[in-house]
Amino acid sequence: MKLTGAILHSLVFQNPVSCPAQNWIVRGWRTSQQVKTVCHAAPFFLPMILLRILQGDLSGAGHLLKRFDTASPETISPQPYLVLLNLKSFHAWLSGDFDAGLQAVEKGLAVGKEAGIDLISSGLRVHGAASAIGAGRYKRAKALLDQITPVLCHQGMWIQGWYHYIFAWLALVTGNPASCRLHARACFEKLNQAGCELALAYCHLMMAKMHRAVDEKKRAIFHLDRSLTLCRKYGAEQCRFMALLDRAFILTGTEADQALRAGMRLGRDQQYRFGFAWNPREMACLCARALKRDIEPDYVCSLITAHHLMRMIRHWTSGNGHGRCLSIVWEDSM
Image (cartoon, rainbow, N blue to C red):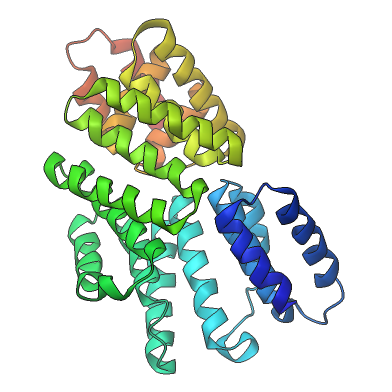
């Protein structure tokens, strides 16, 4: 089981949709049925959870995580338990459950300190910062990232890349395009060096948002196209959801409407409540546009309610003749 988990973990980073990876996944499922408890199968399940999160299969990842509800540092040993908490925090913020994400991070940091294991702490803080951004607690996000900065050079390329990704995202939502450019480029460089092509789908999405923030539309569209290509190759549906919405934000006319419709339909089908590089101001604009065009109104209204976008929708729609859209949203939120 440990060998299967180690090989599968490596293949997740290299090419999770390759034939060898699929063969090891089948082998892992078969072997996991032969062990006495789920905790003994942790070496296999942990990379499977990571793969499902990266591919946007949040319900599948959540189902596997529930198997470990009774796990503790004693039942699966401290280090795998810390990896489990790291994955729980990753899954939580992508699901829009920011409080749960921060709770998993705080618990992980406490367990790591007690066990004298610092290996996972930077990864936990990265996901904690993502949860804080989602909750609108930008100072908390920066504080968590600043705790990583002194030890960043001692981290692997994977953690360094995601550190810069979250910093670029923070700069994006707080209106600092220069910092966003710096960290987006560093993120792309580090994750490219990590050798995980799947992760480059998220990097291209961030690069697109960065270029759009500095009015470089052609470069933004180039990176969005690359992101969507990689999303299709690796089945990264949650990243594709955000890339389609970003495409709708950049383009105009029929192309924009098609991208918006496809993105919102995908979000409804997968019940996505959040996503990579989520920008509440942009989402408010896209939600207002979607309601005006009668695109997935129930799903769109659920996003507006969940993320308290009503105030920003008033800002985006004031003076633009979108009164009908506003009334739809307001009636639903009541």
